[in-house]
Image (cartoon, rainbow, N blue to C red; front, side):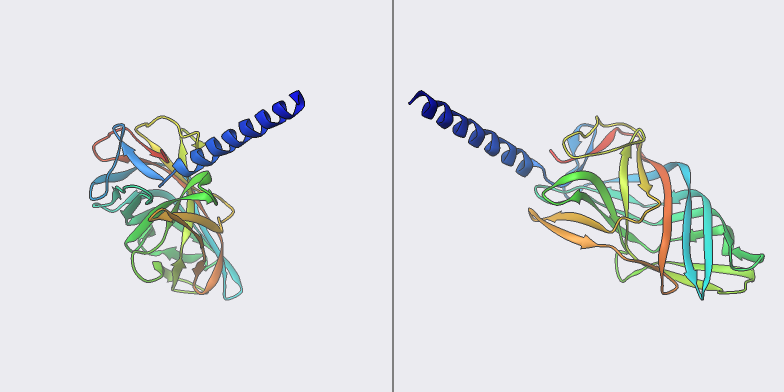
Length: 251
């Protein structure tokens, strides 16, 4: 009888723990932006800027049988870029035009240059998301065009041997970092003035996006000149134009 009571007590305890864990998992939502300690609500925005490029941006694909690599040493947002608030089980978003600067190329001829030494994207609408299902894992950012599929037209000038321009299409995912550490669900660091976006050397293939309290798995594709991109990497520090402390959270 005593053994039965202990077993029953254990079962109840495990059941309570399971409920607590399940409730904890369900409590996560978003992810969303907090500014100055408060969730940025739907309808409100904050201007956003690039503070520093801390890792060169590299775009690489085989086009016409030749590997072409573009390397850019700087990055910035076009004026008017913002982060946007959200409420409830909806992810925070941002609207940005990303400009890569100091761009050079290899593979397209020694006398060929990236036009203006820069690449400017179309308007992007970006969405915070999870690296794993059930609102777990790393907090990431899905970058995709606000409309259509064209991210940027990469143009060249001079004596180019393969192409004079090639369109970058599709979507790409970056990791969100704070003080060089990946932001993960349940271990979100305190808000700070500077956050980072990191496009890793291996393209991230999937992200889970929350809308209306439901998660949707979205696969990414990235093509340049109709060919699969093998590399898109880089890293930038970001801050708000008003220099407020901010962060990415799920609770």
